[in-house]
Figure: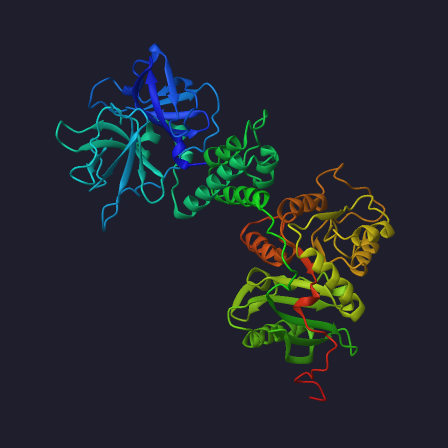
Length: 566
């Protein structure tokens, strides 16, 4: 779809009266003086969609224009008789039409006499000063350029670089003078509050809003089938309003609800999440290629019981680069010094990685330590940023590092290389399937990700967790703060919201369409969001991700730098 399609030609009684532009699937803005003959019959034609019929319209709001050339409020809001399948115009942030260093080229698309199909005019502004608190003066970009003749009134004034709207033409210049006036978007909002949510106010909001609009345009053009209500519900935070009782008529309606109806500090986050979810639905699988190992450069931190007391931990740190293992250090340390020791050795391990390689921090843990919050450990003594919010970080079961298990996992990952997503096999906290049946499901060729509603220590699902480890499932995900219901209690959300079920629902929405090899990066992004937002569902997410091709044989003959035989 072409973004220029939102330009509109306004006709009254079959005669061209001026221009307008689409701001929602059913709303067009134009000048009040363009539609003063509304009673003669008002129609809107989108000339950039050749052959499309004119759409009947009616005026539903006016800016208070009194009829004179210099009267303020020359704005009219038109409601179309039906929704049109066209991406609405995107509005630029306030004050972007003027640059203090050099004039910015602005483009106007109007319908003067002899140009029923439309024509372009290039203009600029030399000062952001408002005339009578209402207009900004436009001056021709070139002395011999197209003048703002009748038929340009109501045209959107757009930035040539982005196509974003900065205002609307309200008047042409005097005969022989190539200038005119526009009403900037911040003034238009004064006369029609419905426009307020569409005018970005920050660079961050602009990027997110522009991305969301582009994704919706792609989705509509591709005929994507999705439930707009479910998409909004999965994106909204706890302070956002509920979706309308009647639902959303289209994906555009849901997107514009997010862009226009939400405000407050959490609105930007909802826009981002909505765009992220839509982007995941649009992701097209890459063409099948020869299987190859992911290009991760892992740093492996192996923790084990020392055998010399509960307070002592055996630690080995290695770096993998260029297909080779580089031992960094090993020692037995008390738990009180464990974090500091790991911080220091991870920093040293980075010196062994190929410059620019994609780092991956992997903790190989005993099974009874798999729920340790290693992703929340500080990355350095002078930096409290959690490791899992700075680097892709995964855990794996130390017992799965035996040769036979690595062989089975390697075969599974070679199948997963061509998989466009990681469908979640849900292990609910209430009434889970028998462990034996779960093993059968996880050993099927398409199996990838086992998602648990409870932590590994839960008596109800501990046998299922052990089964997933030994199957072996390539990926297992759970929340350390999952459903805490005991073995003999009922669950399933009947007595109230179940945190485990909510976690699995979010997991489905965010990760099911992510290629398995990319899961560590996506979980990193989720952890960053959770660290910045109270109550985020991924705050305590634990990712067991195990691709043996990232590591050389853990039982190779390389002597460790601190081993007795080194």
